[in-house]
Length: 224
Image (cartoon, rainbow, N blue to C red; front, side, top):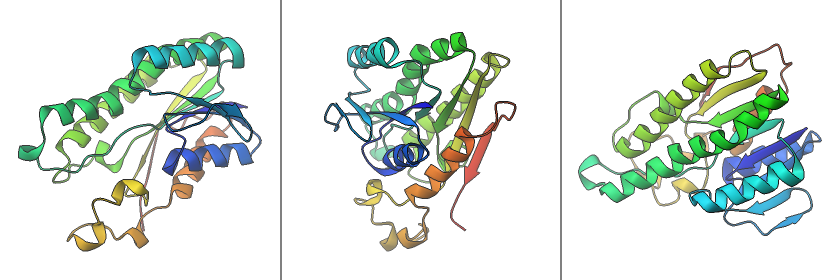
């Protein structure tokens, strides 16, 4: 199995890459902070928000490595800020990272997967792609958009052999929470009680290894 994971240098993306590799997959990792090389993973550094850079690295994947069997569209950004304190530039950045990048990735890779007649496309969403929370206006707008993109692509690729899944985790203990300090804020889940990246990776692995006659449309998970 050839898998491609974006935002795979840390957090959920790294955990997903490690889980798939442990199961024997060849895993291509895309992220800005990687050093190019082939070891446990095929690492290709890329600023996914740079159109030319993304096109170049996907040319390399499709031309030299192959059409992925599994794509995990994980890369994105997180912003927690009240509406009145959110500059338009920050809103635009959330849309670019969390919605435009997944769209651009899908636009390049899904047609190749359709031509191959197979594959799993797994998008990492969020509890904020279906529930509204205070201070989440920009982030939630981008994640609700990703859910809309997912649902449209499910319809567009039905019958193609390519199966698309949205995985929507609740609060997960990664470095994105460091500046927020949720333990000190009322109404937030304590970090000790959050999901772990490995929990999300297990969910992704479950989806990626279902038989081709099984479509997992939407998988939601959260802390107990």
